[in-house]
Length: 220
Ligand SMILES: NC(=O)c1ccc[n+]([C@@H]2O[C@H](COP(=O)([O-])OP(=O)(O)OC[C@H]3O[C@@H](n4cnc5c(N)ncnc54)[C@H](OP(=O)(O)O)[C@@H]3O)[C@@H](O)[C@H]2O)c1
Image (cartoon, rainbow, N blue to C red; front, side, top):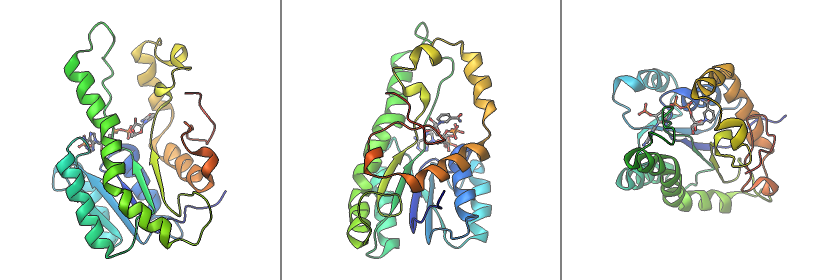
């Protein structure tokens, strides 16, 4: 399987979990991207220490303050990236940031939690796609590649099997404790390795599909 050849990549929620794992493996790739924009809510705070340590060693890693649930923060971050790119485009936007409330069963979930989750997990990627679209289009115009690919210009939304309506009986009805345990089955490293081996094979035919970390289609 080929390696990801995107010259410029931007990720949300990259200070921990899968986002941080992606940054680490992208930096360690034989041909790392020219620029990795690793965004998080608080790049100056204690939760971004590991990211700052990486940035001090890797000049191609740019830390960016970005709260996906805050439209002003998203547009400000897009402006900073545009200035940094100095006329060049952005190849790959990875919408990774998300929140998950494990205790939210139908009996206890409230409007506030539902709205907060939608603001981050659904509206957030939409705001990101809108704000970075001009830079993605620019990258597509600069490229001589045919068709759609992550090395040309693409938006990847990191989703979950929990988003599959068809798989609901197999996921949602399980006690939450099982989900928590199942999350521990796949390490961040394995999950990120899988993601990074799937990204290079994506093309038009994958547009709008829900794929797992091994590139296998999950029904919507
Ligand atoms: N882990 C799994 O087993 C699994 C399975 C399926 C899908 N996924 C998906 O993979 C992605 C990453 O999951 P994860 O397990 O790495 O999650 P995680 O460890 O909980 O990390 C979530 C990241 O999102 C950030 N974030 C939350 N709200 C944000 C906002 N409003 N603006 C910007 N950043 C925000 C967090 O930043 P703070 O530090 O500031 O909170 C953190 O960096 C998610 O999209 C998740 O749905 C994960």
